[in-house]
Image (cartoon, rainbow, N blue to C red):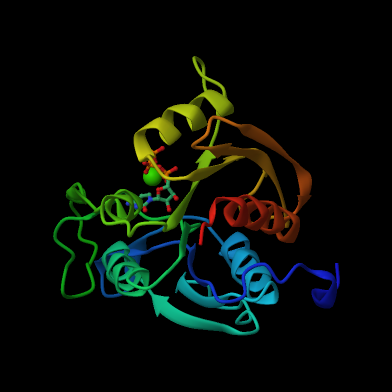
Length: 229
Ligand code: CTP
Ligand code: CA
């Protein structure tokens, strides 16, 4: 759809979207990271701005993606930096969307110098847990604030993608959870997405295979239905 054909149903709203993937340093030149490109978060930010929202985009390692028109972009690197940027931006926000892939673990003691190889076997890397940013945002939520989480899931022996998504939704206690099937070339580093939109009222809406802009539009449709006053 052309921008001027989109609904202007987010005028007067302030939204914050996280995008990309965090990087946790092992030493000054190496990191633990993930394959999130940031494209879904960027599409969410772009569509929100087109629908009239004031948008802050907290972008983790998304070099190469053009800034979405009309969005304020805050660049972060690690899970801890993303956490601080989200908490700062959340204070006067109507909607928070956690589309970033946030590291669950970080090297516990990153080296202050470049790690050198020796003739011996390397030491194992000790990991520490990072904060769950989405859980903290839900804990600190303002009245009326709508919070959206994302879950990228693969099926496994016991449980399918949707079942994993339902279990995560019950734990996360956000208002909406976008469940994406990943693996085998799906979702990460590709243009298309498909999944389910789980809502706190119990509805489970399939999201048809389509572009990341279409998924973004479906998310904002569901969010605007939850916004009050
Ligand atoms: N998330 C977060 N902070 C973290 C990890 C995840 O805010 N440290 C957010 C993600 O941005 C996403 C949601 O939580 O919106 C779900 O992330 P996911 O990795 O699917 O869930 P986890 O609870 O980390 O569970 P697991 O990785 O074990 O499946
Ligand atoms: Ca995780």
